[in-house]
Length: 122
Image (cartoon, rainbow, N blue to C red; front, side):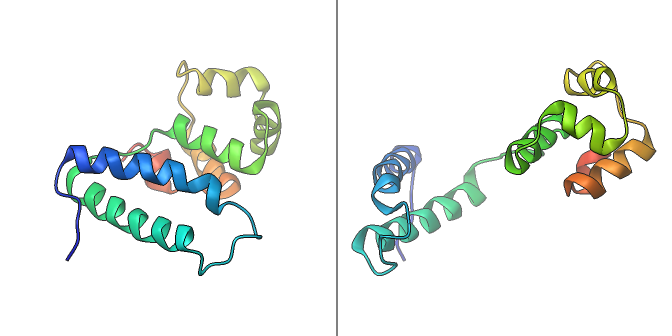
């Protein structure tokens, strides 16, 4: 079985993935192309290595909110509106100056599709 054995191989594999990404982007590249096949195989190798050797940790609530905002194309003001809170309150949460209440954390989970464990800091 082929696997990444050390940090140097891991970094080299990540570099190769970076080279392959622009070559495989878009609908015009068939799934059977050598580049897409290589990318899939290398991605699996990296995932296996990371599962065993890289501790990514648990994302913070703020990091998760930022990710959801990016994924959903939302501004901080729009998220505040979705959550029924003021823009200054949202800003305080995003800057780490305030913690959301339990009710607000529940609303965040529902509206932004965030795992409750992240919202509760577990």
